[in-house]
Amino acid sequence: MDLTNEQIRRYSRQIVLKEVGGIGQRKLLNSKISLIGLGALGSPAAYYLAAAGVGSLQIIDFDIVEISNLHRQILHFTKDINKQKTKSAVEKLNLLNPDCTIEIINERITANNSKDILKDSDYVIEGSDNISTKMLINDTCINLKTPFTIAGVLRFHGQIMTVVPKDKTSCYRCVFGDITEGDPSMSCSQAGVIGLVPGVLGCLEANEAIKSILCIGELLTNKIMYVDLLRNNFDFIEVHRDNNCIACGANAKDLVEILNYEGENVCDE
Image (tube, rainbow, N blue to C red):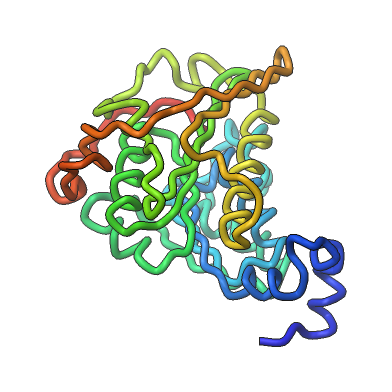
């Protein structure tokens, strides 16, 4: 696929980078990235992936826009209150870049549909607001051998890690085990969050996806990046793959077929 003159002008600041070039831009235009959640993490990720020229963006969310979302979920405006987040998002993304085809999945992702929804994805970005969904995406992507990034935020803090199943990197369960329920007192509604924190983490998630598609740079694999924007600390914790991990270890099973992923919300949005 040759780039049009308009595409060359649109993406000129990317194409000039030796890590991207025309070949890399075509890779982005031919890629499909799935985004779980259109909240505080998903909003900046969606904007920057569409702007970068990702050819197909599958957005998955079943929720509606509420006024309490607006200080951090920048895809949604005051006029969008009570509107489906997928509908609100596609309106903005279509205006931003017509090169990006938006596929809407306006339903909850569950063990019954996760494989079908994500099976054709080149990359998955997890931006949900609960631990159980994060575990489901971890287990589904490992089964599909699809690379993915998971992030979470609270107050002034965030964490992010990337998993590449084909490279046998450590996974989310290697770190957090079989936790499926969060502490309600550690939710955004009770503990709070500064809106720009998920903005930073969502951009980092989009950056991981772009690097993976282009096969450039270093991904956040086998480590967790902890961000403290109150003190401007960025720390990396090395994470070793657990050979006994029930998701990615030597005797791992297809957990999507056997586990119950219904859990309580914690805060990532």
